Each structure stands twice: as C-alpha cells, then as structure tokens.
View 1 (cartoon, rainbow, N blue to C red):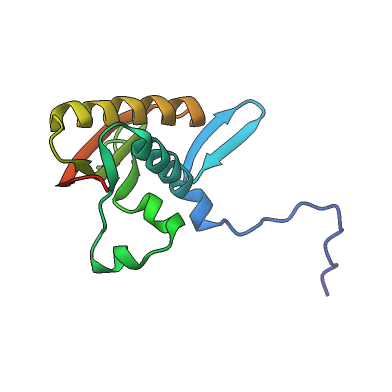
View 2: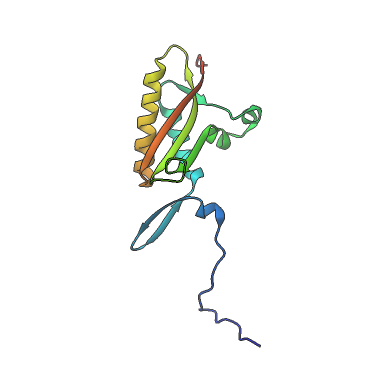
Length: 141
C-alpha cells in the first residue's frame, strides 16, 4: 500500500480554465493573470466616461434585462492577439450608443484612444487593437 503524501509535499492542482483563459504577465517573481472580464469592466467604465457615449449596446433582447454590473460589459469582447491567435497584446471589440448630433468619427476616435490608454495603464498589457462599433445614435435623456 503506497504511503500518503506528506502535508508539505507539493501536489499538482487542477488548473482553473477561467483563470488560464485570462491574459498573463510574467516576470522573474511570478505570473499575473488578468481575466477578460476584469479587462471588460475597465473598458466599459472608460467608454462610458467618454464624451458623447450614451451607453453600451445590448447584445440582444436579453441585454436590456441584465443587472447594472452586466450592463457595463455588454457589447464588449476581449481577445488575445489579433483574434486569430497570432501576435501579442489584447484586442478589444466594443459596441456603443452615441449621442445624436455629434461627429461619430471623433467620438469613436476618442473612445479608441482612451480605452487603449487606460487598459495599458491599469493592466500593463499591450493593446493590439480597439475596434469601436457604433450601433445606434440617441438623444441623451
């Protein structure tokens, strides 16, 4: 009969797929993994602060029923690299609703620049691309 492992003996732990699917920064001291959900929250907060953004676009009829926390990240997709698995960096795809009467190209450019800067500043991850899709225009309430 084999002996039981000692309490101090290292054991292999099963990996957590949710964490492993995140974005990783490595150094000689160890590894930091940042989940896509955490990055999506940074993107959502930053985009909503941009001038001209009325809100994030819903992903369908269920999107309107989501709670406040989920509404912040609706319409945001985070992927590693260029989306095809090649290259370094984070690719951000976001869908917004912009205030009627504003220059859409200027609003989109501001969103792209601010999101890229804030994600890089807060996570330390390189941002490969920020794709902004304007799904609708509305008068602000």
